[in-house]
Image 1: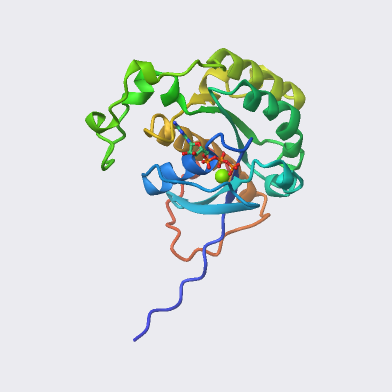
Image 2: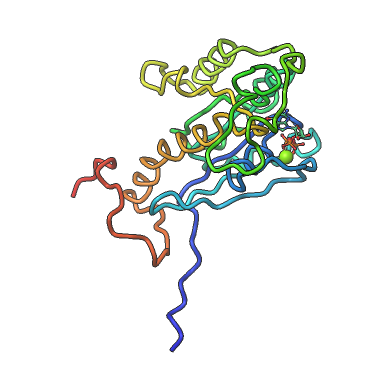
Amino acid sequence: MAEPTKKLKKPDVKIVLLGDMNVGKTSLLHRYTERKFKDTVSTVGGAFFLKQWGPYNISIWDTAGREQFHGLGSMYCRSAAAVILTYDTTSWQSYVELEERFLSLTDTANADCIFAIVGNKADLTDSHAQASNPEGEEGTEPARLSFSSSSLQRKQVNKEDAMALYRRVLHYKGLDEKACLPAESMCFETSAKTGYNVDVLFETIFDLVVPSILKKRNEGESSTVDLEAPSTAKRTKAGCCA
Ligand SMILES: Nc1nc2c(ncn2[C@@H]2O[C@H](COP(=O)(O)OP(=O)(O)OP(=O)(O)O)[C@@H](O)[C@H]2O)c(=O)[nH]1
Ligand SMILES: [Mg+2]
């Protein structure tokens, strides 16, 4: 006999990748979801990936960095629980653009939206990132990466710059730095090419948005219709008033 149809899973929460064209947003998402670095074409509009994280469904939105799609950005950010502001560590301009062009798009995000600042392409500037070999990767063992120090490029944006931007983002949002997640833990340098720090980035954010999901559920705003959701959800973090 046929099993009862399981209803479609609905995202519990939304995470958005923002940043200039060519910084590697799509590549980061590919690396995380497909464990690969593969050719990309510049994103048109936006696309999302649904990630199951424990009993929760998280949508990760990849947006287009190209100026012509700029108008769509605030739509993608609507009700976002986390925004990943991405720059290219070899491009100062991509860092500047985050504040000049992308930050205002986050006005439509949740009031308690979490921000991460991500400097991608660390493999181009950092020998450690070049040699990184994420677990379970096929075809990316260090021997095949065959980089030499001569392939390193000048790093244009340092972690300190990223941390300074993080503080300015909090200021822009009218948030008290002391009450927010610290800059050191919310600024990441990554390489979609080698996988360096990519899992850490996404999974840190997944853990951080769980309270936002639980809060939403407690407020009864929306509940998923996922028939598979186990009853052992991490409710301990919710501080719910059972
Ligand atoms: N060396 C290196 N190259 C990267 C890395 N990430 C992305 N790239 C390259 O950078 C280029 C742009 O990558 P995408 O992922 O398409 O960039 P994007 O931010 O999605 O760009 P838009 O969709 O136009 O906004 C591609 O040629 C990638 O192969 C990385 O970590 N290291
Ligand atoms: Mg893209």
